[in-house]
Amino acid sequence: MDAPVIVVGAGPAGMMLAGELRLAGVAVVVLERLERRTGESRGLGFTARTLETFDQRGLLARFGDVETSTLGHFGGLPLDFGVLDGACQAAKTVPQSVTETHLEDWATGLGADIRRGHEVLSVHDDGDGVDVEVRGPDGRHTLRAAHLVGCDGGRSTVRKAAGFDFPGTAATMEMYLADIKGIELKPRMIGETLPGGMVMVGPLPGGTTRIVVCERGTPPRRREGPPSFDEVAAAWQRLTGEDISAAEPVWVSAFGDATRQVTEYRRGRVILAGDSAHIHLPAGGQGMNTGIQDSVNLGWKLAAVVRGTAPSSLLDTYHSERHAVGRRLLMNTRAQGLLFLSGAEVQPLRDSLRELMAYDDVARHLVAMVSGLEISYEVGGGSHPLLGRRMPPLRLTTGSGGRTSSTELLHPARGVLLDLADNPRLRRRAAPWAERVDVVTARPSAPPGAGGPDDTTTALLIRPDGYVAWAAPGSHHDLPMALERWFGAP
Image (cartoon, rainbow, N blue to C red; front, side, top):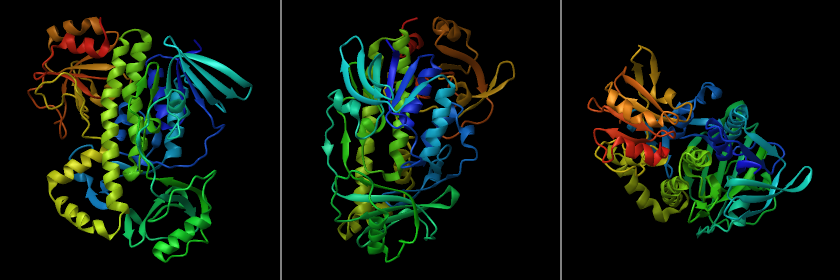
C-alpha cells in the first residue's frame, strides 16, 4: 500500500478529511489536479454548524476576527437566525479561498501528504484495496490504498470511474457569479427578485464586491471556460438597468441549478464526500458547509476501520447518516430556487410563506434546516433530547478545579465520555475503551445554552464529530453497548 487512504481533491471537504485522518494518526495522500490554488471563492462564509465544527477542532483562531451575523434568508425571504438562542450565528464574508488555505495549512501541519498537479485517470477496487492510475509531473503511475475517497467536486472523476449512480435533474438555466472591483452597487445581501430574474450583491474583503446574476429563460450552456464579463454585465443591465461594464472583474464563473445525489456514498472501498456526492443550487451557501461536515462524519469512522479498532460496518453509518442530510439539502435548495428564481406566478406562495415565517416555530424550523443545527442521527433510541444531536458548547469545571469546555475536549477528535455526577462505576465500565475515549469528570460551570443538558443529566458520550451517542438517564442502550457500537470491541 502507498497509503491507507488516498483522498482525491484538495478543496474544503478533502482538506478537512485529511486533517481528521491525521488527528487519528492515519497516513493520507491527497491528490489534486491543479498545480496551485486558483484563489477563486465559490463558497462564502460558514453556517452555524460549521462554525461549531471548526471550533471543536481549535481552528477558529486561524481565521482571526470572523464577522458573524444573524441576518439570513430562505429563498430570498428575510430570516432572523437569532430566533434560535445560542450558537446560531453564521460567518458571512470569509471567502472559500481563505477557508481552503487554513484547512490545508492545518492538514499539512499534521503531516498530510498533498500532491498537486496529480490527475486521477482511472480507479479499480479489487476488494482488497484500490488502485488509482495517476498522471503527475513525472508521468503516469499507479498508487494503491486501502480506501479511496472522492472529494473532487461535482464533475468527480472518482464518482464516474467507480460507477456510482448519480440520479437527479439536469440544469434548466445558467447563472453568473462574479467578483468585481472599481464600482459601487447598492447592497442586495439576500438578493432582489426582479421581473426578469434575481440579482445579489455583497461586499468582500479588500474592496471586492460579489455579484450573482440569475436571468430567467437563460438556457444552460456547455462551456469550455468561464463566461466573459461582457456577458455578465449585459445580463446585469437587462435585469437592473445599471451599467457595470466599467468594473474590473477579479474572476467570473457560471453555474446552474442541476440537482443530483449519488444513491450510495460508499461502494466497497471507494467513498464520496462533498460535491462529489451531491450537487444543487447554491442557495444559502450550504454546499461547502455540508461537504465539510460530510468529512467530519467520515474521518473518525474511516480512521477507526483503518486502525482495526472498528469493523468496516461502521462505515455503513456514514452513508445512512449523511445521505439523509444530503437528501434534505437538495429538498430545501430546490424549494429556495422555486421561490427565488420563478416569476410572478409564485408570488402568492412567497407572500404566504412570508406570513408563516412571522411565527417563531416556522422561523426556528427553517433556520435549523439551513444552518445544520437540526441534524439528528439514529444512535439507539431513548428519551434524552440530546441523543443523536450535536453537543452544544458547555463550559465545565473539572474535579481539580480546572476549566475546560465540551468544545475544547473535542480538539483531538476522540470520543469523550462526560461524567457529570462523579460516578466511579461509570468510569470503571468505560475503562476498557481508554485508548479511544477520553473520560472526563466535570460539572457545568455556567448554565447550559439553548438545547444543552439539564440538571438531571449525569453522563454524556460524545462522538468525535460532536454528536451525542449515549446519555444518562435516557438511553435505551447501556454504556458498554454504546461504546462498542461506535468505538469497536474493547
